[in-house]
Length: 174
Image 1 (cartoon, one colour):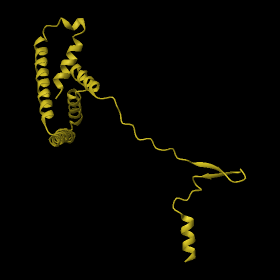
Image 2 (tube, rainbow, N blue to C red):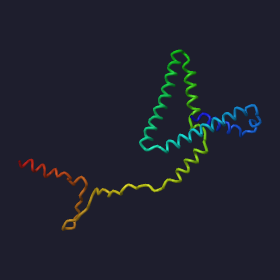
Image 3 (cartoon, helix red, strand yellow):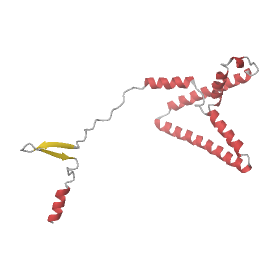
Image 4 (tube, helix red, strand yellow):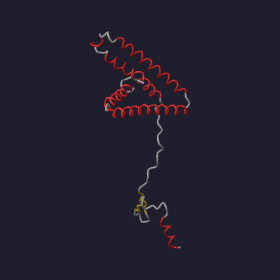
């Protein structure tokens, strides 16, 4: 869907060079690209406005349908590629499919409006993050002293959380 937007961005980038600026023969083509890019932007804005008006359940369903349609398009390209390979023209068909995919990818060129929107969204989000509750550090050993002042070291392994010794003595008594 972003083919003409990408073409417009590429055209604008190329027109920065002085040698290309004086070419008047392509002005009709440039105007057509700009018009189509504007239509794409308008369509994308309307689609975004419609998406924002949906309820959360409808948004999930909308995304599912969009993903399904994208996968169907990809499946069609794969079918076209396989059919082309069967007839012996697979490589050009595969190249055409990949070029179409690359040119319609919205991340191909830099879009200032989209970039500004993302920056605004990041600036509006609160910066506070929930910190996980602090857990009490595990005590691997402890030192206590007897009546004579001698140290008694107790380790994590020495503790019997399941009372296995007592269970063993109970089983042996029976």
